[in-house]
Length: 127
Image (cartoon, rainbow, N blue to C red; front, top):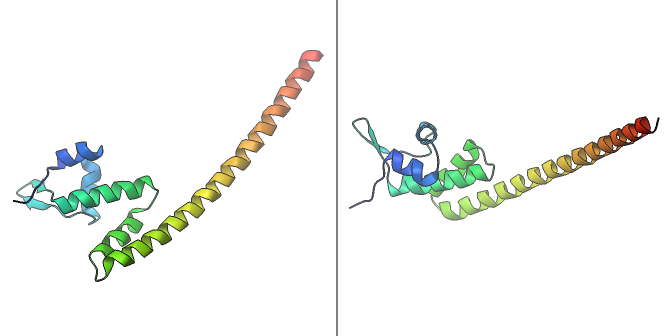
């Protein structure tokens, strides 16, 4: 017998809202079976949710995650998926390094402003 999960079970397991899970269903990233008004999720859906959550945590867009997941089902999908993932990792890393440089520059600028303000305060206290 195939193991199945309810939307509530998956929401608790992955610490996400049922609304988020329904969103991923609407985006066709997961495809639970519908029994009346009840969604029944398979092991495949559970695995895909784990990958979706990991991808989102790493900063990938829903569309990027879709591309990666869709390759899994394609002929020769695993190696294509891995090459695409490596490409996405390189791009994400590049963007994060740019953001880190921007943040460092802003922090340096804030330090300079703070130092000038402190100097002005000290000059005012001396007067």
